Length: 523
Image (tube, rainbow, N blue to C red; front, side):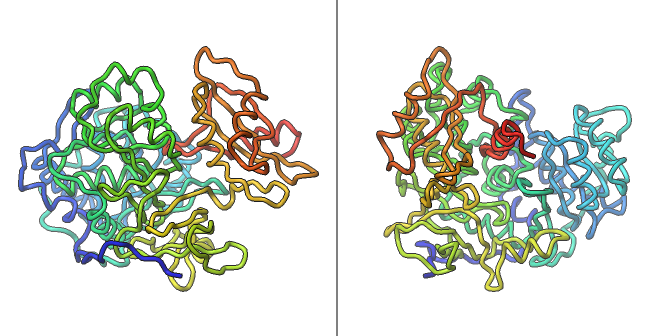
């Protein structure tokens, strides 16, 4: 069965990305577009339009254009948008790099994407230089600010670029973020102008942002969520976005209070802090209208606790880097506990049995397959991985397990490859993690499979306790056992000081599995 959105399809604009993002900026050019949270530095909507044109002009004067790639290795600062859209305006491609990457990881992305220029900050310059030398092909490195051994970003400000380069909306790649690389080397995700503009237009009926809204950009712009929902989405709707280069809870809360933030685009670990951390009580967050969580599953219980504490709804959305990213979101007033929302317009979804390939009915868990204009062009230089992810009918196989109810609301259970097989039963780690987080003494948790001769795999929980709390492994297991079927019970518990997570907030279960393998003496 093919599921569709409860919203009517929208007309997909025939425009490149940057003109669409700047469509409302000149209506109120003095309104702040981007504010640097720590310093208060402001780029207005009018300055953003002018700055992008000047950066595009400077790049074009150097011969940068279609077929060229600009790499950005930087934290969230207002000037990120100038570099990003300056390159896009010339018809070039932007590849965004995780600033926490090692030199070797950066070199792989530079080499694979064939980046011509790098834009970074002084703090990351040494890594950028080492990676560029290893990768080869990089002509010049620019830094926001100044540093020995690199050109200042201000050198790129030239005569304003007039208009926009001629691009093929359906085929020219405007941005190439890299997948997380949880298996093997990370892959370049080729997203076209049509992909990104289409997804912004598709999302508008469900994610309603007004020029009066103020968002907080603590999620990294190098990640598709921060890039599209925050940097591009906020500017496209004429609103204001306050950036943070790194997450610190006290600074985050202070910024939200001082700037009267109305829209919180977060990941589950930060929502968990809003729900449970004592610092939250020291700040006035009354301007909040909505907290939108994505990138990883958020339990209904944590969402409810956070909503009650800060006095606004906490909802979820869903998407992937490969879908630009949004496929599901919770419409205003349409909240259902634990739901990622409904399909956005122009999007189709199937729920498929991963073993048989058969479509499943309502309330039955299967793999989500997605089709729509937001689905990527493919993986760079990797036709095999592309064919394994997007089938001949255009459906992207997400690898996520979930179901849809009779109201058209979707629920993600877990990753297909993360499911624990206990005596033939499927145990979703995310479900157990959400349950563990409801314990008043538990600050965070992760669940992974442990090989077992009799059962196949046993669910093991890594548990981070709140300060001053004492619990035994038996007490943790008893807490879970009283609330789930017998086959879902946690069988092993290990206490830890921290749960490893990616920059986007996803639990890095792979690191915990590696730790377990090392303890067993396996490679």
